[in-house]
Image 1: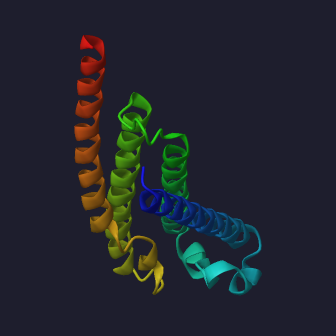
Image 2: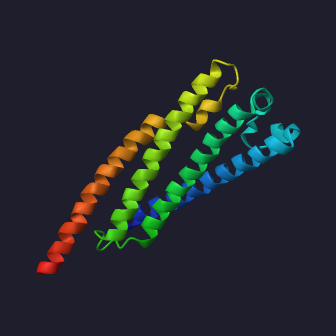
Image 3: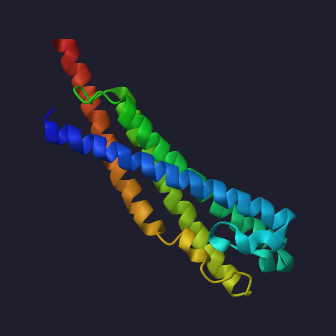
Length: 178
């Protein structure tokens, strides 16, 4: 492994940690927002992202819990996705990367990514339906604006995982014949 490759790998490892920390903070902040929205809505304007859905809560509790369920699920799943990326980068043997652990982690990353994309798309459609009834405030679409990108990215990662799995099988077959 060359020095440049090693430097890039560790740079990406640090970036993955920073993204994970940011997504974890976002998920925690949104969870605190949700708890305060239900139990003490008068302090919402002082909290994270000023996500005030109290009007939705008074109009329709079902819409409120549905929207917040999507928001929390997606934010937590994005943090879990990057935790999986970090675990992959930490435990991967870069001298011999074709092993079952790496193959399984890449496949798991593709599943998380596709799930994020699909749930983002469902949440966007759910929000569109609620907008017809004037339940949804402006700016709520920021949480699922990139659904198509996640679906396409998940499909590409799945293809890479399938190719990687075939590489692991070929390497295992090669190790047995030698």
